[in-house]
Image (cartoon, rainbow, N blue to C red):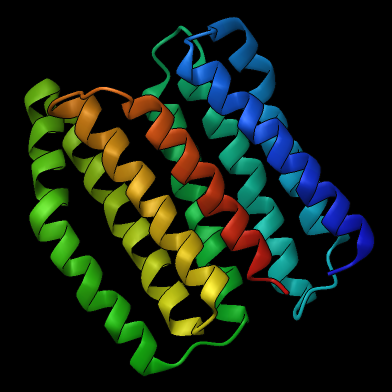
Length: 210
């Protein structure tokens, strides 16, 4: 990792902690600043890294940009859930391409597939059912999103890289909590859990480039 990347990663951590405090205290107006700013710094980190694959970095950066768009859609007072979901779905497609370009093993990928099939059977189907209960039109998009993020996690397992696997699992955990609280049952501190796991997950995917 370059000195500049390390500095930017440190600044990312500071901004992320600020966002967590903002979310924890429900300061919505401040969240409009800090939430996208975390992604801006992560993009800067990805740009400044010395990656093992320049192509993977480009794909990951595009994914980060779409993630930032998704963040903005989901935090605005208007109901832009479908737009946010679509942005994150596109982001995961680029993450999958980035991870595949890093090189994957079939054995690791299959381990990831089995794991995500279990998660989908236990958690994913309940979230899809909850989405269908809220609005039948949401069932398809939510199911498609779960399929794509499951592919992303499986691809991360295929790389065999610690940061990729940890980042993908944390991202998946964040989205699972988000889907559960939106369509099934909310619980205390759910928003802060979503944001902490989400930011750590994104950071892990960025560090997988090293």
